[in-house]
Image 1 (cartoon, rainbow, N blue to C red):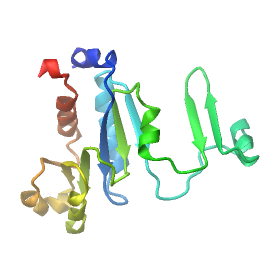
Image 2: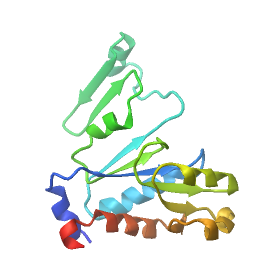
Image 3: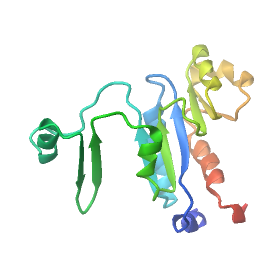
Length: 180
C-alpha cells in the first residue's frame, strides 16, 4: 500500500479534504484518530483541522508565546526544528486554515458542518438524520443503536467501528487519475 501513494507526495495537487461531522460525543475525534493511523501507515502526509464550538486555550501560561498573547498580540507564531504553530485571536474560515496545509496529501476536518467538502456523517440516532441534508454528504458512519436507519440512507454506510473499510474508501479517492 505504501508505494501506490508515493507519487502523490511529489505532485502539486491540492490536498484531499474530508470533513467528519456529527453532534457532540458522536465519535468524531475517535474516528479521525483511527483514520490518521491508517493514512500514516500508507506514508501519507496528513493534516487535521478542528472546529471548537467553545473557546479554547492552546498556549501554556508563562511561556514566551503566552506572554506575547497576554501583552495583546493579535497573532503569534512559533516555530522550532520540529514543529510550528500559529495562534490568532479571531476565528479563521476553513479556507484560511487549509491554506497552511497545502503540503498535505489529505486533510481531515472535524466540524465546519456547512463547508462544501465531502463529509463522513456520524449518525447515532434518528435525530441525526438531519445531518444528511448538509452540503456534500459522502458516506455515513452508523452507531449500532442507529442501525435501523441504514436501509433509509442512500449514501454508502459503514459501522462506526469499521474504520478500516472507511479508510479503504478514502484510499480509493486518493488514487491518481492515471492509476484508475
